[in-house]
Image (cartoon, rainbow, N blue to C red; front, side):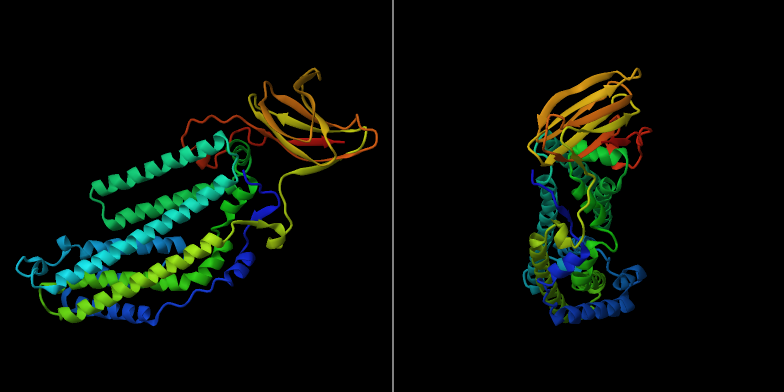
Length: 445
């Protein structure tokens, strides 16, 4: 497990300086020229031979603001174009057998289909690599024990469930647009669940920290990373404009082909001219979008998620506390437990001194001390137990055996109320246990 000590989530100011090292070479001028040409031809065809106002209206759609949503939008357009380029969906006059052996259009369309299929694969591989990088980063900072295994298994189950939803939609006759609407909702669900983990308070946040094992700095990262004015807004402002232009290009290209196909059998417009426009557009869009993904992949590969507080320009804050234990003295923390079966948990490390005595006791109603953890000296220790009864639990750091040397200890203590895992989405809700406010620490030196 990699240490997160001294690390904080990336900040927008840090990314601004980082992105200065990665300027994106502007899109070739043909992107704008060909996108405009596709729109003009689409509108010309629509005016002459179409009664579908919704299709032409899509030319005026505004690109989404988020980088990943634009990537999904482009992937959807590519799949729509592939559908149109497949010979089963050609205009009837183009599919006639006596046309195919001598008609060079069929061969040229097959090459365009191959180009777009390769682009679709590139987008899918880019999205998969980005997802895996985030997941593997989280794993790097998680305890490498059963919690890590459970985290992997939970992700695999979730992804299988999501894929089953997509397969069911397609099997039921859902359109390509329906499929991508579902895929984006699933993507937003992933993001929402991560944000909930980061922003939750009380019992949920404590459960995540102690039982799931995700460090607090990661919770802060997933909570803030996609805020409208958070770190990723810098990325959107830097690299969004060329991507937005490519998204508009893809929509124009798809609408152009759709309208052309609808008028093809009427032979109103010259096939040679429109086919040349289609070939140039597919070639430029495909090459420029691949270039953009390759560039963005390099930026992602080198961009950190967690940085030092010094690099972030902020003070490093967490929920650990510091205590200095004078020679011959003890330091005690009282934890109130209001729900039987709560998890009393602690984590501490000496920052000055060789070792310190540590023990835990339960104070029952008669004020009798019952040992819960026997006295032992430690340099550092992390542990927990389920409380057998409600009441007060006392954690004691003992330096009474030392005559001359004081000890400095950095620690945190929590009381986690019991939670019944009756819902498979138990950790994806902000609902808190009635005992969620049961943690209260009273310190005395």
